[in-house]
Image (cartoon, rainbow, N blue to C red; front, side):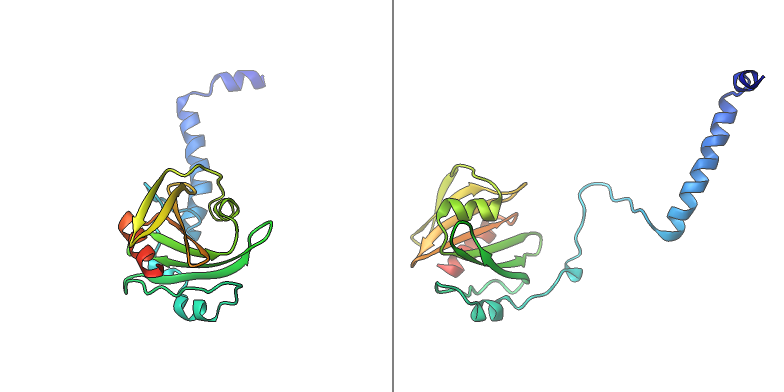
Amino acid sequence: MASGNRLTHGPRDILLSMLALLLMVGIPLLLFRACTFSPGAPQADPASAPRVDVAAGLSRAQAPFAVRVPTVPSGWQGNSLSSGSVEPKGRVVRAGWLTPEHFIQLSQSDAQLTDLVAAETGALGLAQEAVTIDGTQWTVFPGRRDERAWVADVSGVRLLITGNATADDFRLLAEAVD
């Protein structure tokens, strides 16, 4: 007899069941705002990003090399500062900024080129091209996701700029640390 009841269920019964499920799941989600809908790419609110005084932090950084303190455009917001080791031997000091639309980071290190590029970009990609800024040659490597990395040796310090910022922003930072 149970199988007879199932055969009598039609499209109307299925729609009513789906509606009941939608209400049971949808109402709590709406009440507690547990879900959001954001078509396209996720958007970051620069106002909610951490603020860091990068210049002061770099001035106090302890490293076995001379740490540069670049002067960046006033529209850039310092939002990260860290230091650490680069395997097998080397140190790195990192500073990051939010440009009006993107992110850019400067890493300063005494590590070997391949070790630094691997540590900072997560990739062992081959150099793609070279860019010369104020007489300093920067080698361009692929970075994570849509990022790229520029690397140069300046006065005994290996500099690496990475991020998804524009080429003009990369040039501005390269000029500021050169």
